[in-house]
Length: 423
Length: 177
Image 1: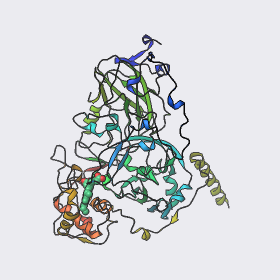
Image 2: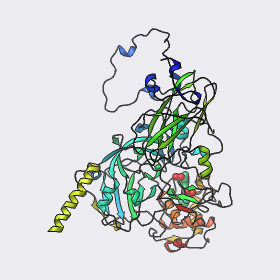
Image 3: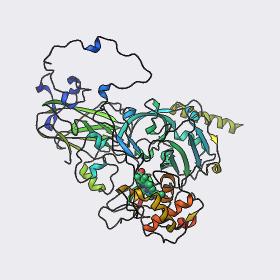
């Protein structure tokens, strides 16, 4: 295929997504490596040493290649004034597909990770129920389960973009508080039905077994919908940092309400008004009223490659790739712009498009060495369109920095350096 | 007889719907009954209606001693904080351009202060205070914010009467789609 045949579909080099297939670029995620035509490798290939001797055999528990060890979550230094507290971010710029490996799923802890022996752990359902019940981990393993692929996003993700100056960051440092996994567990409604919900009950109060005994309230109608008690994450028991042996999982909603290390569900007429649904995770508007219980995460997309602090080493065709998600449905469309939003082209959505899950998008783009501003814009199955940063900040102000889902811009300069900008 | 048959048909119907959705084979009932009195030491939830407040009590004067020995290393001697996240005193929701949001300026319910300190503080030794110590230390935080008098004995009854300055500052969005 020659360069001239590549059909340009929007300004500054965006190429029809159909060419992704012909280009054979799918899976090449690193910006610096893609050129259109295979060039002469400049050397003769020989049989490598690892093809001349047997390697180690099978093992009980696998690990990644030592050459892939640089793929790490990003976390701050431990803070003695906040024991166990803090977060770590997924390396979005290095990941592909739409499932986050469990070891790289983002974390947010309020008092560290409890070391829970599942045989000693209890889940209690009480309050406004006909019969308060206690379940052991063994009990719960015997219930019929469901498996679903969902994203999980901290409501503070990308919050720095509310600020007056663009953070000098990467896809990981700015957006890494989102991950995707297959969660397996018991519909919460099954256990609530067993306890027998009293007619006056309107809320559940969910509490974790960590040292902060983190609590959140959820209205009963939502709790009876698609909420589950998750016991497995990508097929293995939920990791300790994700709530082992069990967590609440509230699809599409801010991560904090999917209470980890779940130990107590109390039904009540009113919410508990816990600290993490009053002091925190509330959105103060410009008129100084604050929105409480703002659960669903907005329609959002992020370009993960090329992205902040990467460098385009030479001109040519690159694969622009990223993830999109919505707390209110599935992703129907992702558009990409290379000229700061003046013109847009449809990207190819390549993963299964399920509700409240990450969708991987890709589109080829030819960089001819000039300035470019890469943006992506998602539309979900309810017709919600990702807003510009300016309209989001104008509407919400920046007293609170939760629930950022505006369009973010990566500027490419003539040297090929990439930086987060406000455009 | 006919009611019984109807019930069987109905439950067969709801069973097949369930099976269709979740792949469930049988409704399990594996939870063990427990009574609320058995949960007294386990349930720390203290909502605004006061139903979760325990016995005990005390004043801000007593709380000052606890605060200075157990809280001030992280929250500052006067609750001014060692970081934005640990500031407990001051702020004004109306006058400041970017309001400093603290227990005093922002929190809508006094119950949250009892609930949170009892379950999560001090951060280096959560749940190490007695109920009376919790009443006393939160009395001191409320007093530093000018919400109660230093001499008020804070207990389950008086805490229920405490009104927070920003009590009308929140809009419930829990049913928004």
